Image 1 (cartoon, rainbow over the protein chains, first blue to last red):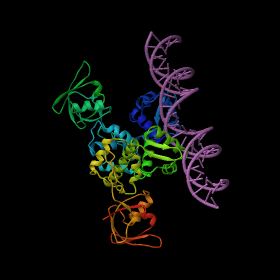
Image 2 (image 1 turned 90 degrees about the vertical axis):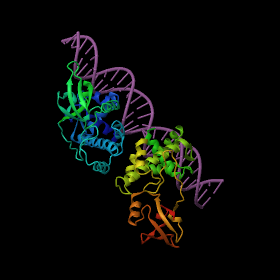
Image 3 (image 1 turned 30 degrees about the vertical axis):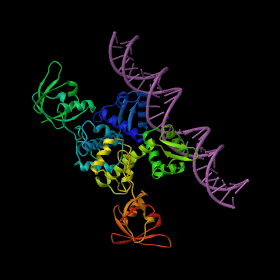
Image 4 (image 1 turned 135 degrees about the vertical axis):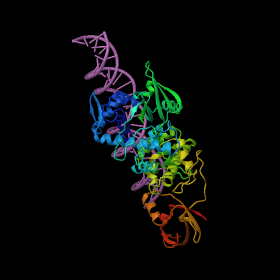
Length: 218
Length: 218
DNA sequence: ATTATCTTTTTGGTATGCCAAAAATAATAA
DNA sequence: TTATTATTTTTGGCATACCAAAAAGATAAT
């Protein structure tokens, strides 16, 4: 298998298994990678042979230690590049993902560590996602989804779980940028939509959007 | 054809045809890309169909206008990255080529132009090779090979035509870095080796090495 | 001019990564 | 439980990028 193919599978499996605990279904992988299910079955069989995943037929896949290590490495590269593009090269929050998607496959430890050093070895990327260190360690955090936030409490926007351009543009429009402080005003009984105060403006967030926004209690 | 494959062929043809004037033989392409001659024949046929080259059987290839444009674009990306790696990220002159070889395939105009802008839109890279601008224009120069230099004259080291690590390390050892001023002391009648003064030290350069060093009269 | 050599092309074959459609296997609902 | 639906797997096929060995074509040497 080509390194790029391996990397795309492992990264996807890691991201879909949330913290590498759950087993991932073939269909979700196929959807995420825009591949035919038949292709995914084949790919997973090969990754199993390469001992990057444990793949049980008609059940699902999970990463082995080796697969996890590789997945965390590619995620590190991706998030370092995103951060570098945004902070050092002036790219917008909504632009960096697509470019990082290509740059992440350039595998040069010295390069990534150099970029990380310039950035001050950050632990979170511009989307609020944690950046694994060189050994694959991830900073554990007490982040929750905005949809789980409590009324009257104060939070800080820490990240998103949907990286689509439309969503990121939507957030920017409402000033919900990373680091922004927010206060939960009300939660509608009717549809669970959230009314919050952000930079002195009242913003109404749908439950669907709130489910994609990561916040931290402050 | 995969974009990367196309790019590697066109870049190689451009580099081997020196200023895009000469016709390039299949064997030279095969050697440069470490490919079987059979593979090259096949590749060139496809590039001809795609109208990137004019390929005449058992004769050779040359780039079309479209091929030239693409070749210059990939060369621009390569040289901008080399310069950025060396000047902004602190990589050594001998390290940048290999990394740029991978980064060059990330095709994002905004990214390359941003890097170029940070570098002050340079016209030459750390190897002394000219960097095409966004439209593919290359700065023409009055550079000559060190092997063609005249006795007693003063020159400035502008680049190299051999990018191997061994050669670059050899140059660094003799302080023959880009921009260094040199004075030709003598040229040995016996073997044409050149004795020059560089940073107050006398250095002896073999004809083979002198043939790979580009200088400009000052 | 004829051999010898080198280069290019053709031929037949491999591995990878993909898909569509059919078959097998779960999962869910009635 | 049985039928329906959804998921997964198998099968057969295609395109790309490669190679080794044989055949054809060009170049050089005697």
